[in-house]
Image 1: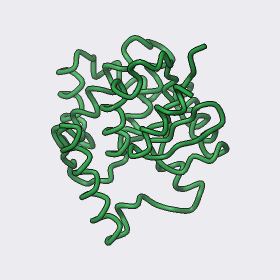
Image 2: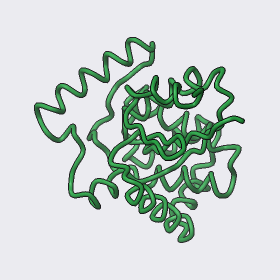
Image 3: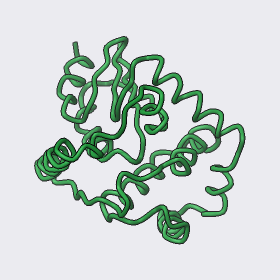
Image 4: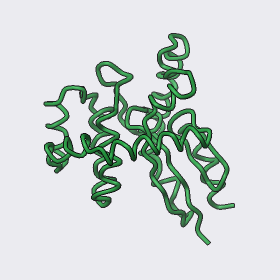
Length: 197
């Protein structure tokens, strides 16, 4: 019987971006299915009383260098947008909104937003830049902005974030295989082992 892997993510996490890019290789041959779990990482940090590790100078310098090593190894472009770490509230509302209303467009949206943020270092805080990135990926910016303003979608993102906190999630990416939790793109080999055990 195939297993289910949960992939908890926020578009503002470069580690989750690298995991997203590596995910097809990790899943290949496992027969596993994926449940994508949108959350607001800032909400997770706030609930647990901590902040992004890149805001700690020594740790941040090390982490950015380590992420660059993983990007080179996996041949994935990695650049950081202005203002990083960025507020992804609207982006994550767009993600969960598509999961709820138009799920076939969810993966293309996440691909496009990750590429815009960390492949091309676009400043998606600028509404014009975001609209251009959405249009280039085949999305109607007005429809996506409307999703991000929808009360039901706002509540769904809050609920997902609260669920993440209740299950012990403290960063992104986080994976669950059954009740076993794995954190970080550097733990994906263990995720693959758990999926085939």
